[in-house]
Image 1 (cartoon, rainbow, N blue to C red):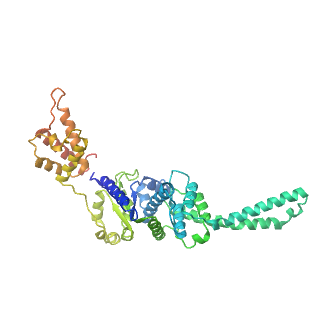
Image 2 (image 1 turned 90 degrees about the vertical axis):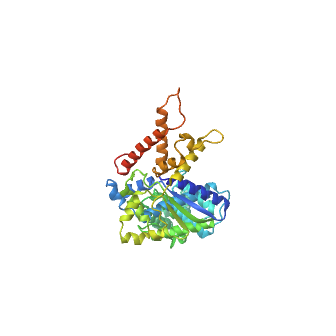
Image 3 (image 1 turned 45 degrees about the vertical axis):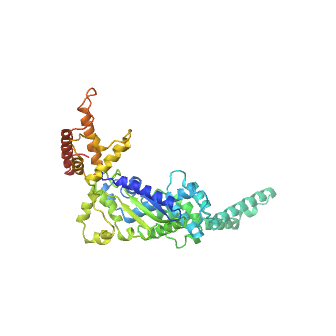
Length: 427
């Protein structure tokens, strides 16, 4: 309740303003704040029927990278296919990179993958004719064979059809296409197996890879192994495409880690998921920024970590803020802003007008300071207003909160808050 999600929304709005003001120096924002689909697919792949903790123990850095690439590529393809008013200007290697990234990571549910992938290729001008020659050759040979059979039947001359060489020639014409499909299927199977957070099927990916020329796939990184090296190269390709489209940087905002069904607020499970991401090499990728809005419970685990974790994460280089601290004055301003927003009069009402003049601003600020975070602040104000309304009738209304009511409700709320901090009360 310290306001992390509100900070995320403010950052997104600020990036939107920046992008509107700087169309040639925009920042690509990826919201990594819904872990449910990725965790559900991961557990169904590696831990079906196993305890959740044992399954999450297999979560690695490349699973995070796959999830981030999925979000970024899906968002980028949507921008190119649906939102761009004119076709983007990409070189052929950049168009190939975007097509390859989309084949592996585009997971939009708005339309089918084959349709969306074809639209993307046409949009960026990726005409992979060389990828179709095995199929075209097989089709031409089949048509020629069928025409020869029809012609022979009309002339009554089908003796040649009983020999082996026409059928061998037809099989030879189909051989490149069959070999291509076998190789594409093998690659697709390895990619789908290693991408434990994705929902691409082997058939979909195999068809996409088979449509790309072998020369375009030769030497290209594919997420076919359970390691991060290939993902780093794919991330670099994504950054190159973004730069060509006017995005000079990319920011990933991580939030709501405690909300997925498989985590459900558990500190140990949150640690299992987010710890692999705390890797200095990953967090310091040039042109890529991270904002990790994490629950306070994780800082207690950080304090207990050893030298190996600290050398890998190098949190001393990550601008780590242990907790979001809210002063009484800041909480007072937040509450005053909320009251003004709900006010219908002119001038707008203030927070101090809700209380008896005997409660001066200093006492009010001191009381709010003990609530620590905005969520607790508004819970207290709600409880206070309800208790005040319940203690008076419509015939004899009182429109200011007395000092006695304020002090008693504040004491009760702080007692409940202390019980929650000790784990003796629900949220």
